[in-house]
Image (cartoon, rainbow, N blue to C red; front, side):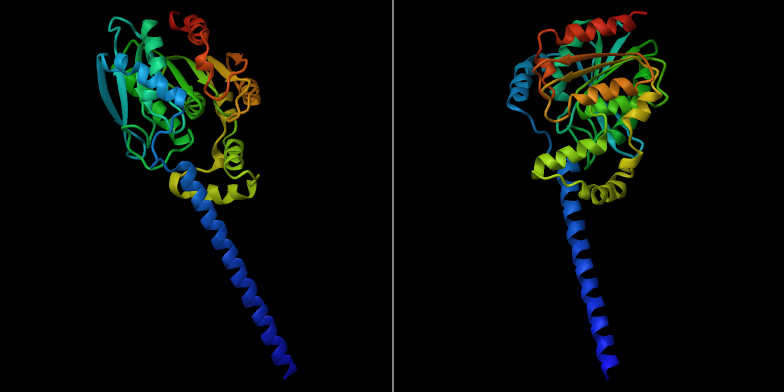
Length: 312
């Protein structure tokens, strides 16, 4: 009889342990799903700072007075992606593809559109998947977007047979540009600019989670990665700016503010050290995340770099 009672107690303890483990797994899975939706779902659309709103509103009359053309391509996974062509210099072969950041759209790239247009460059500004007029439910933090960028580059090179193309991205768009530099790119691409891009996606997600919760919760990354693999079809372990840049054959200008509290300025050094090709680096004193563009000399620095390659 004692043996039976002992066996019942063991079975009961095992059942309780199983229920506890199942409840913990459910809580962990639910929390991971919540964080995934918070970070990757683009349903909330564009989020702008007051400065970005003011800048966009100021430049809208210029933008809507231009000879604009909406263009579309299909992504590798079947999404309809949108871009805008500003071909203000039809006799020029100089082009820039502009790639916006997280929770932005191509409209946030209007300052760069105008600056490049004034520098005799034609412009292709793109809406990343899930933003603006591009299809998609989730952002990919730059990884699926870099394949989209390669497709845009091939499309533009096919449309403009003699084009010399610059890739320029900010924040998440900068990560997409750097990832793209590790892929076989069209010979038409001659240079690239990245502004405040992150060097390590996992580290950036950890910082984002910590900033949102006030706690260091690296333990959530495996759960988050599970949904990334399920919904976005890649793993954080597969994503590496370092690896991609080690294969780069395109000169890169690295821009970063030394007061960036979203992507640490140390990432600029990591990016520079990992590149297998020519780089230049400009650290902007006192500039926060995506604030280097407020400097009066911002585009002077960019064009001083690009002019070495655009007119070869």
